[in-house]
Amino acid sequence: MINFNFSQIDEAYQRIQPFIVKTPLIYSEYLNNITKAKVFFKLENLQRTGSFKLRGATNKIIQLTLEEKKRGVVAYSSGNHAQAVAYASKLLGINAKIVMPKNAPLIKIDNTKKYGAEIILYDPTSENREKIGEQIANIEKRILIKPYDDENIIAGQGTSGKEIVEELINLGEKPDLYLCCCGGGGLIAGTSTYMKHKFKNIKCYAVEPKNFNDTQISLINNNITPNKKLSYSICDALLAEQPGDVTFAINKQNLSGGLTVSDDEVKQTIVELAENLKIVVEPGGAVAAAALLNNKIDVKDQTIVVMISGGNIDSEFFYNISKEF
Image (cartoon, rainbow, N blue to C red):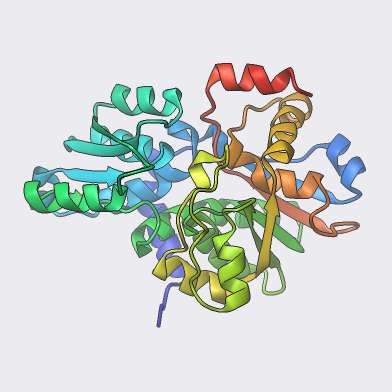
């Protein structure tokens, strides 16, 4: 039984507030008119390191004991968690080693190096990142910083939801729907916990790439169900094999269901967000907006919150898709 609750998020916010940016919550009259709804976008792409991941990594690492900090940390990630762990470790003077897929976006690999971490590249088609990370942790006695299946990580991610709630209350708004990207489920687990604490009737939906909708399927089956093997998506940040034990226990309580979007829908949404909101969004960060803009759920006459979770996109990839639409 998971007893995760909003108070852990409040405590996390107190710890990490000096290290993070309070990201904007914005709306667009143009997109409101298109959707016939009142839509607020939470811009975690403007967070330090370019994604929400800094919140959870900082909350976890800052609580390590002095002895644990001396031993150093290790993490595995396609990029955003990698950058967050590297950045937080650098701030706190901790040695970090990061396991990353060799096909991760170059911007994510370069930034992780820039923040001072040692990178171990692996082949995602033949090697298992969790096993590599655990092996390094065991041999070198490092502390393993998991990307999502940890209550301290989830509480840190949930601080984005706390900011959303406080801003909506200040605006006198009461949201009906919350759409959030979902890979391992840490961000939506944390943010939905805080939002449902303040807005009891809000309906929260996980949004995932086509063929990586393990949370949607797991919710339907009422049991953790992994993705099928050998699938592909441009949404590199959302390719977890299955929901985490901790995240799924929370999301099973909080979520009303799951939605899926195609890679083409994500590409088009990245271009639309650049044109209409003037923001740069990575594929995984755009899936919730893609669900909104492609009518995956009825939003007419409702107040919606859409999570924009990250903006770490290679410039060449962005240029190429901008020519497609």
